[in-house]
Image (cartoon, rainbow, N blue to C red; front, side):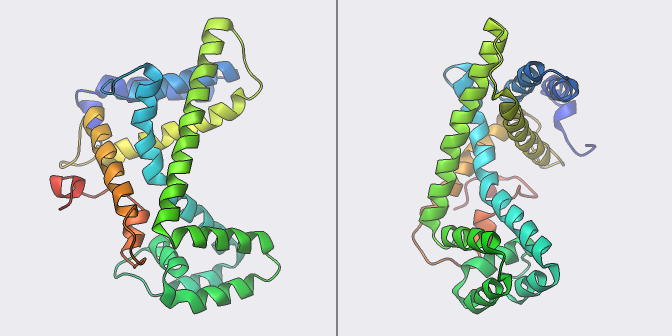
Length: 266
């Protein structure tokens, strides 16, 4: 937190207000207060720089964070389950895979699943799973998605659409609670999703707002994420063979230093 510039910058008050609303949501025992407060935290952290209503402003601001995170989160979740199934064998398979220089374990796992050179290792991995049918099917299905940029992009856009619908449901439910006193039966599920969306946005804004070279306002961070997400989807729309470099493209992580070359690489 000492590295994050936002609390001491122009948006310091917004930062602490969002943290307070998030804390009130966590500490409340009533599901309606939880939803209202976490929505307020999400609305507070989103800049008023997009056109349209409050809901369209929040939706447009949040989606790039969710979209850029999506494939990395899915891959990390699958990697965790594969390691939990057989840590020694899975770790050996991943480390034996052809990949890019300096790739971390998650990127190596991506290369194991996607590169043609690693197909023999994948076949041995599936054979070793034996009676773990659900894990093998899940891994196979995810592998098919990752081996095609078009399918990867479609999965991301489908998820983006579902998140947009869910954000609208959260906002409508918030209005039902505030204006009519109604609490739908699915409110608890919406609270979980709203916390997940806020946590992703908050974590990435802190990552992009840390250090001397990084941003100190939410508007700059959200604009950067909007441009980066557009470039991300543009990269995935290229119909070429998957290579080891795709691991660093598909499994996006916040850059260490922000500059124009990273935002709009030539």
